[in-house]
Image (cartoon, rainbow, N blue to C red):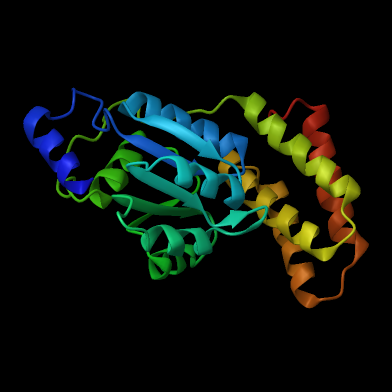
Length: 239
């Protein structure tokens, strides 16, 4: 596939402003808000996007077709994205460009150690930065300078996608009866709050995560996060 990609780029080049024209991106991402941002970036760049929201769904996708680019979130509801990155990196033929994405500190090193060619730090908001990272990871794309510029560089996802994510978190919190679910919700909300630039919710989610690391669950961090999520849903998730 890498040779086909090289021949395609050499023969035709990308249309102006759409440097990823003709490429297919598989995004493995559990957040609809983050997915909506990536959808807008792929749309403006000329790429087709397919989404999987968990490891199981991603593996089904990969059994049916081979994308040009795979972007894998490291925190997924049914396991670690690092495992999927490791497996994709070992495929033959290999996916031409394999990227990890996360907002967690130290995540880039872990993604690259698992086999990723590059990394997208959350929140992913810059269209130019997204295009540069994808192009740099492609075998035929290193050194290309077709990245978008200008006032339309930033993408703003639909706030309804943010509300959907908050509603999902509220549902999980309402029936969470085990530490694994709370750990997942803490990670999910921390990344979501970071992307939405909601500092209070991010701080509360990180406190919930730290509480889990102690092994001694307390009610206060859960109540704090639950209250903030309810407040945002009641306010229409506009903060």
